[in-house]
Image 1 (cartoon, rainbow, N blue to C red):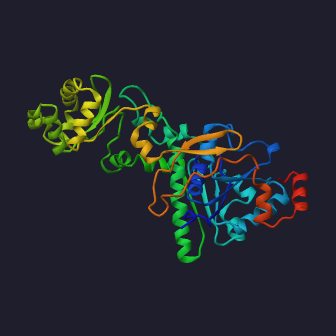
Image 2 (cartoon, rainbow, N blue to C red):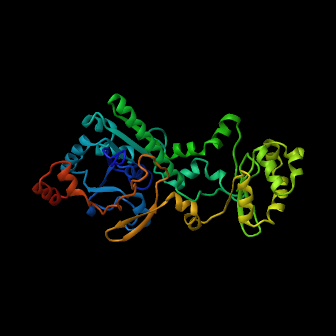
Image 3 (tube, helix red, strand yellow):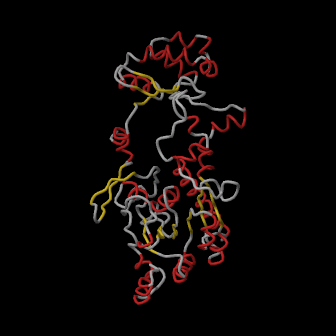
Length: 394
């Protein structure tokens, strides 16, 4: 097959900031045509951040940009023509804004019954917080994520990536794919929506399940696993390594490699529950042995017997690792002004599309594709486009 799997999917992207653009990036990488709808330049730049910056280039690759003022009658006319041809509309406006602009599902459905509307908000489409503004930092705190991150006693700690935005974007992409599958079977469109708060609770997974099932309130555990021991970060003679040997069989192997096989027979370490209860003394005993090994040595020895063990990397070290290079998590594209750019690669692979480039185009300039889209997709004539431009519509 010479085309990527989503080559015939047309997506209108009204999202901004990070979460929504993550959704459209995932679809764009696999071939969907993403038309990023932006306000005309004289009304401001809704994309956020420098267009030449690393974040913008990574978030908005493979997309097209159309400049359009939705607050004008002619802008609404163009918008409705686009919706009539689109498969998906993505938005992350506050409820009152989306209704005013005609971006709510009922309005979209009245134009195109097959349309799928995907929405992201901070706290949900309804409820007492639905109109509140939200960003990653706020939701990390409100979800409980910061309360379980960091060294015990250090106070809440922010996770070092915009995890609530990214998880919401990935969640909405899954929802859109579900809706597309349903439409394939039934011909019916629908509204799918998620929020930063819901997706983060979902990502917290077993930590939330602990409270739901047992009433346990998870706390900070630093670099140790909250329930599976030994799993954590251990000092070595020349650095630190992560080791995960919680299962009984792996714990026995670990003790053997460390030349303390008798430790596995101690009653207080004889199963996962007891090892967790007696974690302090267990960690002291293990650290006393592991600190004499060099990192590379203990990594080699433990992996050789099937015990997960890995180095502690900086981002630079991680991206230069031989396995990372093999997986092609770095990709290059050419920007007409900025030259060669390195971006983050796609995190999954397809046996049918393994030879095709998923990162194909640099992020667009503001309104770069406006005339092409109006002409080729909507059949506007040159004089009509000039009039739209003169009237501040594009």
